[in-house]
View 1 (cartoon, protein in one colour):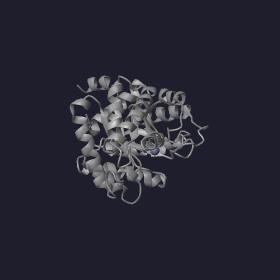
View 2 (tube, rainbow, N blue to C red):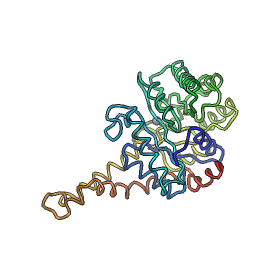
View 3 (cartoon, helix red, strand yellow):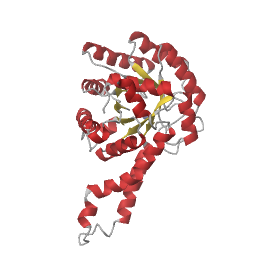
View 4 (cartoon, helix red, strand yellow):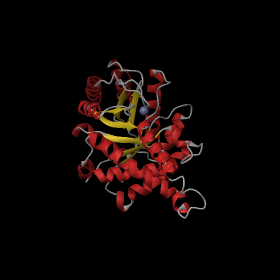
Length: 321
Ligand SMILES: [Zn+2]
């Protein structure tokens, strides 16, 4: 089932309270979305499928138009998450790194279409702009009577965020527009991408930010972890134990899928000749996608397991009943 913003807030609190994290995959094609749902179902786990601006405008979804991208992505998820096979998988649709002058209009469109939860990329914003944009989204939600569940971020690629920023950024938005924030994403020593120096990963900072954000909000607030691709299983487990409730996963996911695609074409070069009797079955998108899926789904399942996600779907659905 695709979760509403209200149900999404409940799931983030469930994760923060029960001590596990929900995997958030940047799925950049319809086939990648299907694979995420297959893996989540096999683990009886909730899953977050999220899109940054590059996916919304990409060829599989918006073809240059981010709002069309949201509509097509949501159409895909609504249909899949409601079907018999995936009805018991709690699915969140989250807007990940959205940036640039159209940020508020894209996110307003996402709110109107009932995206499960919303965040934006604050990397080129000042603290004041970050706060003002979050407040603006809350005001629009209030004016239009739309439900809104927010992740707020600060300097996720800039080392460890000083604890004081939890008070001045997160605390300020919570004070002026209480109740919308569900996740806080400070920098905790990770970096986006692959092969970056991860020497600074800091679970103690996660714990301190989690505790202060929860105190300021008066409810459990989970930490959203960006740049998780290069972390080991032990580091992920330490992050979850310290209060991570959502783990974004993009670069490594893309690497697994693109390596599987490259292997498929390497192994099937002969069959892709027009005179080969298996040409058609090999050239169809289904051949490639099934092959990628076989390599990818076990890796997604392993990631869900290392975040403590197994069995949490049924647990969470009971709390909604
Ligand atoms: Zn990120």
